Length: 365
Ligand code: V47
Ligand code: SF4
Image (cartoon, rainbow, N blue to C red; front, side):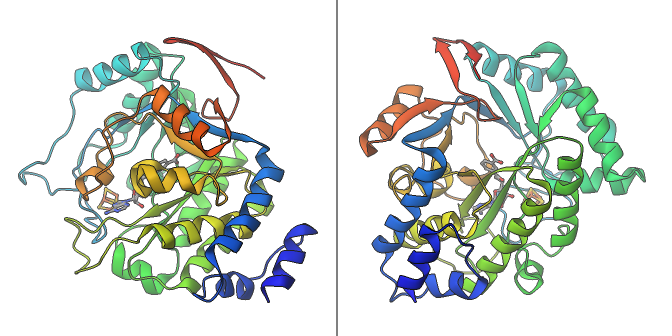
């Protein structure tokens, strides 16, 4: 079957769910799979591997959902619960802007009491103060919550956010779409259909977005393939997704039982299969905070073309036991990429190449 799959890949034919599941079988040689994925990766991105200069902002960890997969969230009043003040939020924006970041990635908990105005003002205040920073903000879960709690359509919430300065949507909250898994790892979170509807609405407004998949917990290969194919189907209709981002589950502090985090080989297999199944996605991102720096670097030869960013102030994976450093320097990212033989190219959030002189930058193309 692998030979037939290789022929399909070479002629640009789409793989089926059955073929995707077959590629997860242990007898399929990971490195052969990796070489196939690398061929597709080179077709789409040539010899370039992308990175960006960004920072994270998690304005509150108080969350009404308390998903069993999550080690980051807290109940109101619980030890460690926080809500950032408007000044702290602006200070984070200023720090990112002064460091030459092109993007601020903003996600947090579903706060039961703060309300729509608070979420909208975070975008508005940051955009007014730092208009060059691209605000990649709010997962579909947050957008759907804001729509539901205010009785507004999702589209109206997105339009108001865009008017305030929203630049694109990150890919979080997708987890595993299949309800048999979703009800165990994130029972209160929006279902697959709602997640996809929010991204569809965003794409219809001309916003770009990403898509994640959290793997390495209770799901099977069939669930992963089902997840990717649901994304592929929406991408066929809208073309609005930029990158697919496989996220390796970190069990420390999460309430999902005694699970082990996926090892490097399992991670590389998922990266490669994603590259082969998601023929209509331009980019596969190896998010080093989640995959580990070493595995993310190797993933560039197994189908991934993007390492994500310098990532300052990330909390979600670090709270769940990620041993990855707090941030990487531009030289670290460039060095990691150069060692693989690919050419490091800085991008902005929309994958335009960036010309940089220290902290001054401009997007080209
Ligand atoms: O949706 C939560 C995941 C996601 C854990 O769009 C966990 O460019 C592992 O979506 N172990 C948020 N993962 C992060 C995210 C993201 C990251 C980088 C880039 C982009 C992008 C998006 O983190 C959540 C959830 O799936 N997560 N808890 C955990 N214990
Ligand atoms: Fe809340 Fe997101 Fe954590 Fe779920 S994963 S508890 S929605 S912060």
